[in-house]
Image (cartoon, rainbow, N blue to C red; front, side, top):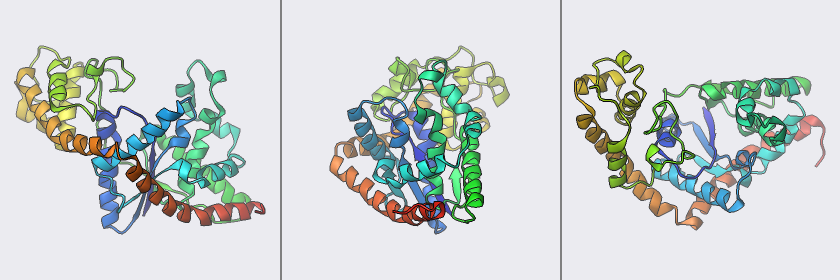
Length: 335
């Protein structure tokens, strides 16, 4: 198996980023390495520029995301870790695939409608067409499997459609059609202030989220002040419906301890949040402290991070070259 996955470099990483994506990456890396497969993780800085970023912020966020991934367990000796911009083949292949992809296919992509909102005419062409760059990201490496959540299934289908059309149009078997990997259900981490809204770095209240750089005391205080209700915890998950804040805190505990919600409730049923919150805070502190300490050390070593990214990019460029060359040749382009 060759697995490829990317993540946009955003600042202010929080618990939702860790439990929703980064932890799954580490587990896939270890399992695939043990099975003799290849793993490529890239920081999607080319995707990031579909909306405006201050250049200095994008550069800092890219290094920071690399530091966070390594601190959380991504091992550059087991997987390739690089940022897209260091591998120009991503952008080159994307243009070649733009000429195979069809407007009608892109018009069906639901995420553009969500991301552009009411300002569709003011959105960048990149925001509209970025699913084709995503296709290039995976087709470039003869990828066999791509981990996808519900929101990305449609984009992987597009990649398969583009690959199949290119192969048919130009009588080639150049592109491997990647299959989806549905990762274990990641906890959907919600705001500590509003259990109906996702935990987000854009929330103006810092008390709404657990940041990866929060101190032990900060974590304990945020959990202590997290919004709850006066009812004790029930003995079954169904009774958490209609109690979004309670449901969120239980889900966080379950995700951290790799237990089911039912198992957590079996232990805490009948207890109020005065008993549950300290237990949750302790579990959070134990999980995040080693990640935070390593991250805070790594993030200042820019040269070391750049060396890791360049080493990964050098290997990625070599893996990408045969496919990119094959695409140029299939199209009759001379270079």
